[in-house]
Image (cartoon, rainbow, N blue to C red):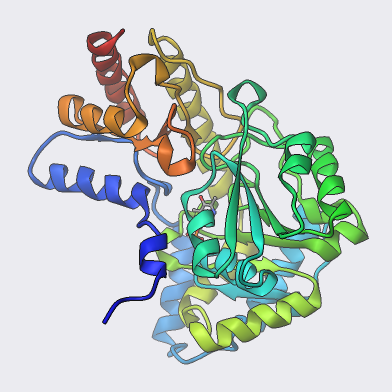
Length: 389
Ligand SMILES: *Cc1c(COP(=O)(O)O)cnc(C)c1O
């Protein structure tokens, strides 16, 4: 007997693997500076925890409707209307077990086997693997560091084939930290719509935009764009709720129905009492978000200054999210070799860029303390001095 062919096609998440190795070293008592994390280091705000705890205590422990409780879908629709300027009825919102689940549902609902999913690189690790699991084919389009790693309309045009079905855009971007402007998105979408592509807009980092940079929701561009767009968002990043597993799609009605049907047979509803926490997250004060974003902005300045002062490294200043992508190609190592040596010799954990489709880069997450950043930068500096070509 043999496991399915998919077992040869997909690779486990490299970000989680490095994180695991760093945690194992830490457990051995080693003083590891970890920049591997893909999650805020802050705790979930108390008022959110309290709302979920209360729901649990009150016995809110049964199945809910597949797409989530009406109260939450309503709150999400209102949030998108006021913050993103897009009109969705609560019935067009499907709450899932994390935005990752929402992305997977979206690919299943839009792509037939063999259809191509256009993914600009560097990309979030899971998009390409998800496409394969869904039977679709990832089509990776490399972007240029000199252009802030943003896909251009010409690059998109070039990538489109008769098999293209879905374009994935993620702004603010993991891992590049880039934020597309309204004009840049409009130009890309124009190309995508000429060929009748669906667009998945992953907006999980919308709150993490610095120096006045503005997140812009693709679905707000026009009615026609709205009809082609699936907006993905969640609670993990904005409210430090990664372990709660709550995300959502907002989509044109037929797609929302399809997503609901798919989910009804796979996972059913996301956790009942967690949904009550999410309602509190959206409805109560957003001060907690603003505070977190302020802290991330300060850390970004710190890590950017530190990395740009290291000879041999070039680096773009991220406009959003909480990652930074130094270019380490001058050291004559692959990104994996660099990260392995960095962890072994300097006890610094980072993620090889090859995991995101670019072997010249490594990814550092600055979802960690300022002390960790300072200590890590000093270790990276020594490591780079030792390995300079
Ligand atoms: C973290 C992340 C997600 C998924 O978050 P969930 O924890 O599944 O809600 C989706 N897209 C990107 C780009 C991410 O970085």
